[in-house]
Image: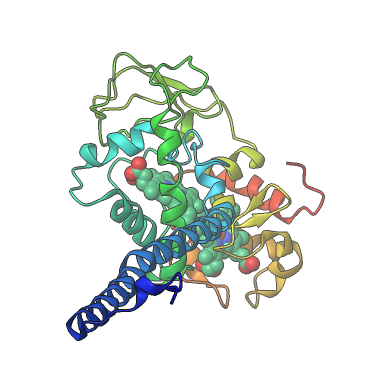
Length: 318
Ligand code: HEC
Ligand code: HEC
């Protein structure tokens, strides 16, 4: 009789049959294990990447609404208002300069969550506000994490920046007066503006040395438009199309509500007091103690009066 083509599949020996059976089980098991570990690992990695991407997106939106007014549109800082975060210095040297031994993630996370309490040397117009609602700020912990992911997202691009001041993609870092940089100072000339010098021009420093420099005295009262920007009010308040802060009340509504907030206070007195003594009255549903208490030491009486008039004028220009 002719053998069928699959005759070689006939296994006669029972031992061989058992061995074959065992081999099949082992192969099947190995396949399962591979599926379980290697493929699952990849799938989880893909999911983590996806989550990371979405977190960065959420962080971008939160940054736009809360941080942009002080740290600038693309995180490159605003002179005299807040330092650059989208900066080579920030990612390579900042932790060394402040003596922080943790990770960059932790540094950003804790700074955002807790803010920076007032310091002896105040170079910026405002303090960095407290953001985590653990410390009385407006953001949840997950939102703070999204923002950290968004800021970390600038690292790669920042490392491409050049130290040369004239270069197209130069580091936008502005030196901190109280934490002298060990970055290549001397080869770079930075320009910074302090609140007092913003109107009369900028202060150029080649070596921070920790001492700073005397700011030129401002010539005459600064106009309200300049003050609102320089004091970073827009970091916390919405006003017109220019400022989008959401920490404090929307100041577009101020002309309508100012006269109704405190019994016996007319609109002007109320707004004046809100700026000079923020603790005197807390607007319902907003956190107390967040609006900085020291504006009266940073603006002259005349300047504050001008700012109050401007805020109450619905036809104000920007
Ligand atoms: C009212 C203005 C203002 C707003 C709004 C603001 N910041 Fe700041 N931020 C500052 C100032 C000023 C500093 C520098 C503080 C100091 O003197 O050390 C700072 C510092 C920082 C630092 C540390 C920078 C460094 O080099 O050490 C980080 C990180 C930071 N801010 C992130 C944020 C994020 C994220 C947001 C939005 C949730 C935000 N900031 C909103 C003003 C602001
Ligand atoms: C760090 C955040 C922050 C900054 C910066 C800030 N504010 Fe405020 N402001 C608040 C918060 C929060 C409130 C509401 C709680 C309260 O009444 O203290 C408030 C309340 C006010 C009110 C009362 C508003 C109302 O509807 O009754 C006025 C007016 C005001 N701020 C003006 C200013 C001006 C002008 C500046 C800049 C010179 C400024 N703020 C800077 C956080 C801030």
